[in-house]
Length: 405
Image 1 (cartoon, rainbow, N blue to C red):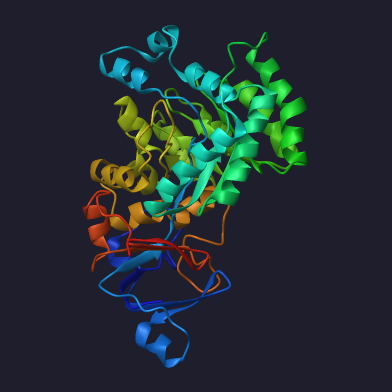
Image 2 (spheres, rainbow, N blue to C red):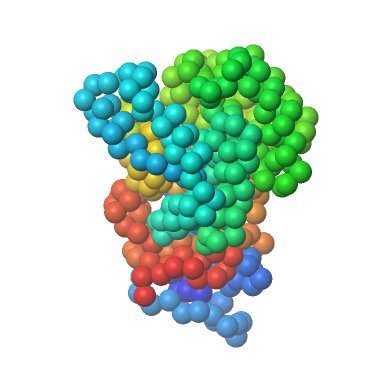
């Protein structure tokens, strides 16, 4: 396929630390040959044509880059929380909203009530919206069931939605909060999940990852350590909702070797140094900051300290209802003074590593042919338009899945 005015390959960039635009790997007049779902050749288009290979010719000026990877979403849910949003704008606190019948429990009740077909449809619809924006891999969490049957229902629906979606959906089993209708302590709820939920998730191949929300309104560090340690012994990969409102989650993620620590709005300088000296990928969620009207996570400080950086949308019904990864990444770049290389890397190959995926996020031979083309001549226009420019062509595993034609 080609010619593309530019191909932003991400090839050869470091996983950690700051990235200068001057060293961003860009191929001009590029062509890509894909076979069996993977990139076989990426080179000058004239060189590709000289091989007498069957090449799909692209009209007009386009910039191509790896498909974006959204590593933190909650797109499997039922119900509407617009009333909560309006109350928050009027000055109500999260606790006050919950006391009036809103908050996460509103979503839990609606999700429990929804049937499988409805949840699958909702999840597929949201995934397809993200796909049209250029996101070809989407992590999806459970956590709105909050009992064994409903959590298994959610994870089953995520699995079945993956079969219908043009994007890849990566499921995560989330210990979100202790439910109101559980007669016991937070630790006892986690013990129930370890005893009954996680074995069923493993047995039915519903997820290979677990996550837990560590904060004042959720689970404390000691209880979360128990859950994560037990899950790790069962063979699950780990992620942690860390430092959204109070610090403490990052150190736990580093201690237990989690793949990622997500949120980080309340991370301290000590936390930043700790994660920079580890293999944990920091995942920042600008959508939650925008939705709640709070400060962004310290993305610039993380990079300057030598940490990696992934950016995800956190699309959920409460704190992050936008769900547009590119817009959020562009806005974060403005406020945190991120280079374009840092921002685009954070939604491609660095994001892939937050999911433990080594087969995508880079345009190079042997990588998945997950490709997104934007109708422009200069890759800098993509972020310059702050999400206002949509892709005009998208390929998943080398097959064109959507275009503006």
